[in-house]
Amino acid sequence: EVQLVESGGGLVQPGRSLKLSCVASGFTFNNYWMTWIRQAPGKGLEWVASITNTGGSTYYPDSVKGRFTISRDNAKSTLYLQMNSLRSEDTATYYCTRDGNYWGQGVMVTVSS
Amino acid sequence: DIQMTQSPPSLSASLGDKVTITCQASQNINKYIAWYQQKPGKAPRQLIRYTSTLVSGTPSRFSGSGSGRDYSFSISNVESEDIASYYCLQYDNLPWTFGGGTKLELK
Image (cartoon, rainbow over all chains, first blue to last red; front, side, top):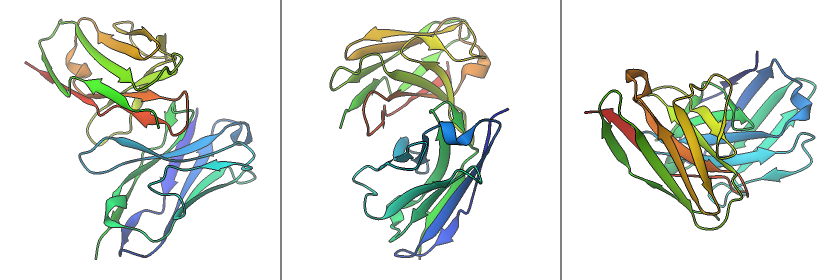
């Protein structure tokens, strides 16, 4: 059974950093691209970052480019999202997903002073 | 970036009704559209991928169709468990982009 479990969320002040993790199981992690998607409270879904199966290429929307970094450790079957220079508009539930088909339960990030 | 215009934003239906949601892309997305159901406090659940392919476990009352820029998603015989929000996603090109969502409520 495919499982994705996120962790690392919480309350953080504007301008600070936070690193999310997503531990995968139930499939061969290094065969798949992985993606982070977020959802602000009461709002729609927004693609945040994707990474190829080898980690050789990463992709971001303009809203997070230069502030967020997606990475992976295939030996640990773990996906990461390093978030720097956080802003109030980054407040959201962050989901990791494989293929857009399998999703984690999500982790809440609140950026507030 | 490809824009996805989803309508309607909300929908009121009676049990047993058929409802349809549409998504129009700002350019041809070559049928690379998926549809999601989301219930409050839960992660989205993919129901349909590549326009009309039902994901394993998706009831047959859900269906999708379309091509080019125009796509639709339907629920025939709405059941109480279908009350949720629904989103389309284009994955033809990065950045992936979602429609604004449709909230389905019981009349």
